[in-house]
Length: 261
Image (cartoon, rainbow, N blue to C red; front, side, top):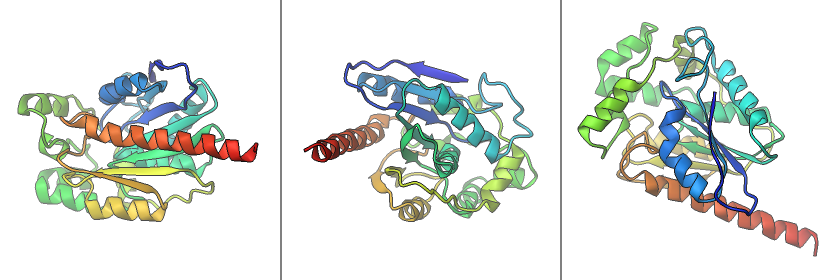
């Protein structure tokens, strides 16, 4: 299922396809979709199978199924230039989608992304802060992410409401996070890694390792929780992405001009 916001600009720009993380759905991108539209990008957000109002089975889903969902969504997006933006688990899905080198995709943005390697750092963070959630994880039960794991500045009532609204997650996908192999991105894509020094789900060292693996550009922000697109201060993280996309566009235009000179 795709949610969409039209571009508010005449100048052609890539479409953005947002991919949510564990237990979330397309609604989590509402702030950034409005901002992207205002900045001139057609913005789309997918609810992976079994999440939000999408169909399909959540209990039997594997990472490859989420990747297939994203690749189908890419084909459904208008235009021939798509940038994938993935948060947390969605960042890992984006890494795997890029490894299949879809023709319409021109770049990727990893936002508080789970590591390219097995996510032991995230599991340890959950174990340290909420041991009972780690027990649920091992037992094959869906993680229930408490507000303090997601937010740094959001009001307590709003943070608790969002946390309660999250759906479950596939136990098979959760197990894969600890045992998957790093993706091999065969085609060179411009990549940006955005992470927060206050993220309690994805340790900074883990985010930096992922950026190094893909030789990605890095934007480090502070004072925002793991859910950077929903926490107070989400504008800061979005600005980092928007500025990077604009610089990418300028570089593309400059290179085309050089080729025709």
